[in-house]
Image (cartoon, rainbow, N blue to C red; front, side, top):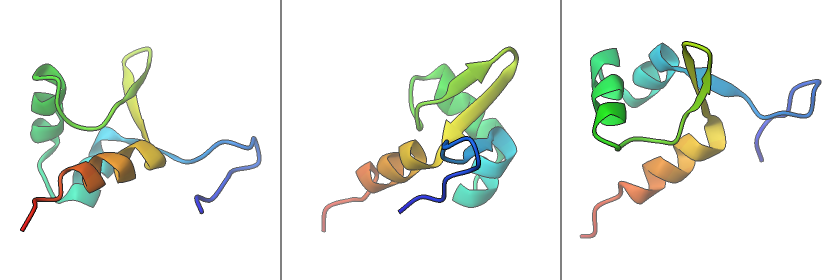
Length: 66
């Protein structure tokens, strides 16, 4: 289960946190956005945020079949 903050919301990652978690450069995250790939993001003004549940779902979708 995801940790919930005092507002009852799940955590959000910024671009650099997402890149660090996935082990890719920040520029790769922006490239994915340009090409309609990567996890779904929320935009707050000029800031992009990624819900942990969306990141987990996207990562699960990337698993290759053996």
